[in-house]
Image 1 (tube, one colour):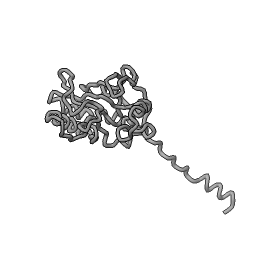
Image 2 (cartoon, rainbow, N blue to C red):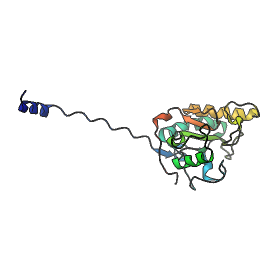
Image 3 (cartoon, one colour):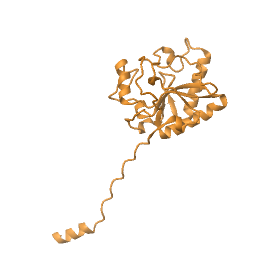
Image 4 (cartoon, helix red, strand yellow):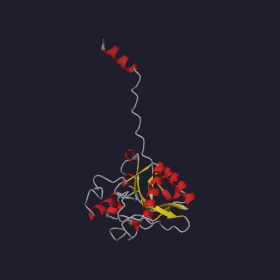
Length: 207
């Protein structure tokens, strides 16, 4: 085939289809604005945490990937007839905050290393408990938040009251309805079952 004929053939060929653009990850949203009736008390924005000082900004928001925040409504609807709601202690966690926790407890069995990232940093994990709708008071649970006690393990019985076990089981049931999986080592921690689809994120918690 001559050069001229080859050139004409190439010009006549349809252009190659461009690869479709990668889908952007769903945005992080303020859970309190998406889930009516939910309560928020971010412990890392106060000194009531394992470190003993605040390392979230004042007025920090509880952020979560939008599809997950919408799913959380199912759990709140399930709890409402019981006079209960969810009380969030932690949601999206910025990389810098993950580093603070790691520096305090450099144990990969307890805290995800900052270079690997936490499911919290994907905006796909929650630390939370049950609270009364009437006054916002949390229900008795097996341990305080962020406890390293063996009683914090899901299903622990020794040293855990029947009421606390029942409350923990109810929390797990509500979160499963919303598509979250209980973490065995911490009764308060739940991961979105599809957390791997959400990348690590860098966002501000400030209002």
